Amino acid sequence: MRYLYLTILFVASAFVAKAEDYTKYYDGTPVQLRQVVPFIIPDNTVTLTDFGGVGDGMTLNTEAFRKAVSALTKKGGGRLVVPQGVWLTGPIVLKDNIDLHVERNAIVMFSPDKSLYLDKDGKSSRCEPGIKASKRKNVAITGEGIIDGNGAQWRPVKRGKVSDVEWKYFAEIGGEERQNGQLWYPWNVKAGYPNIADTPEAQEKSRQDLVRFTDCENVLFQGVTFQNSPRFHVHPCNSKNIIIDGITVRCPWNAQNGDAIDLSDCHQALIVNSTVDAGDDGLCMKSGKAKSTALVNGCEDILIQDNTVFHAHGGFVIGSEDITGMKRIVVRRCRFSGTDTGLRFKSGIGRGGKTEAIHISDIVMNDITAEAIVFQCDYVDRPAGHDAKKEIKAEKLECVPEFTDIHINNVVCRGAKTAIKAKGIDGLRCIHNIKISNTTLVYTSKGTDIDAKTAELTLDNVKIVKDEYKR
Image 1 (cartoon, rainbow, N blue to C red):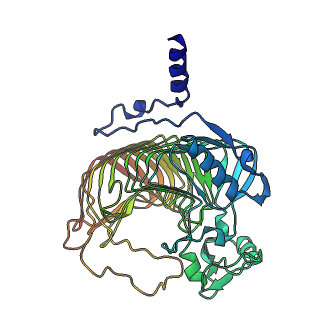
Image 2: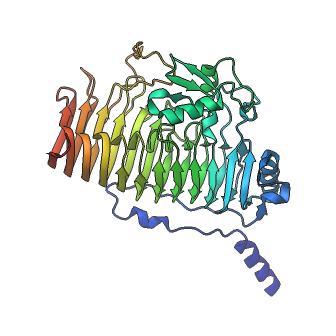
């Protein structure tokens, strides 16, 4: 009997994983949220070197990663440790109950050979992401190491966003210039890696995210630095029960589509203690058209707290797609320093949906290039290489944006060009029931730019002050 008890105790302890107390973050939320639930990864551990991995920065480790994940899967899951070294690899596919653990002095570096990422089934126009999980449960990326997407080998570069020194660097890589030398593509690069499309423009459209998890349940990103993605960095899609804790996301400020953390159609998520310095949106909520086969649609029950955003197009962003809607999102105790805009709500006809119960509070900002708070309903996507003279319009009056039931309280911003800007669409009620309260915004150019005909905002105890020393 004693032997049976010890056996049961051992089996139970073998599946105990350290679980943070995430309930503390939900104290005093202004709306009731479904809380994230810590989950368990089996207590099996393998190291990448056990499967032939070599961290010399030259050896391709794609097969070593595949074998390690397969071996853990046969055991029911566990932790795959990436030890000290520079681990060059192609795409990594994670499965159920896998924790990819990147140790502090380890760098996972994705190969610049674009042919490694081609969709072997030919079903997608985009390449495979660096790290992928699809229809999986209990998937994690943890540690203190770095995951680098080698994005300069993928991204186009706009001449107006780089210095002469940087432009010379891109010319030395090789590549090809378009639009009278105003746009550079990584095409026919001198390193000799093959092109994967017929034109630079077509190849650009195939670039993919650094990390993309789709239709997954129970996801954890913790401690790791994600940097230099070909496109978006950390991108859970149609997934639920997502914990993002203490990660860093960074890329050049001018990285095309360099979004940091995007939640696309996600439920029950927590983003805390993280730092962003990116080339596009910082902490961004997106929602596309409903998919009947998706695990979840829309964005619901999301708490974003205690984060720092340096450069980004927006510190906290909803849009540009919010078609299936946003409900119960709380953003609080975050700081934005050096972002283009602070709180950014952007959408357009064909990309819009309805928001409900969005609560934002205790935000501090400084050095904001454009608006501290902005609502925009005429957003259109203008990818690199588009004809700037050609106007892009929605063909049908459908998927109209509706920003409503948004509560912004206790915000302080020092140094925005414009304090508050809001403009809806003539004849449509796109921006209404927006309340901004107990807020101080110091601007340098314009206090408010609110179109009263199309945007209904209530300002309660809001101080908008011009910085007389900035002219």
